[in-house]
Image 1 (cartoon, rainbow, N blue to C red):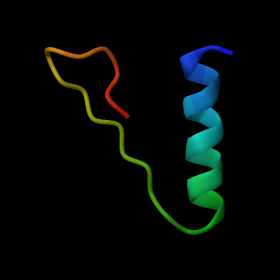
Image 2: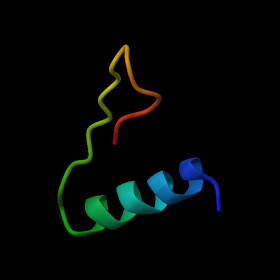
Image 3: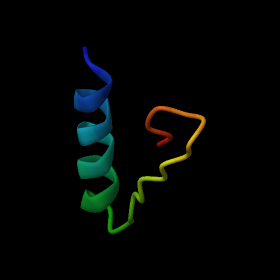
Amino acid sequence: MLEKHIEKKLVIAVKSVGGICPKFVSPGFDGVP
């Protein structure tokens, strides 16, 4: 499974319980969750 798919499921799961899942972008890393 691709990281994008995992991340999407994580965001959906977090939002479903009323949380937020911000995406941080760091210059030294590819897609820090």
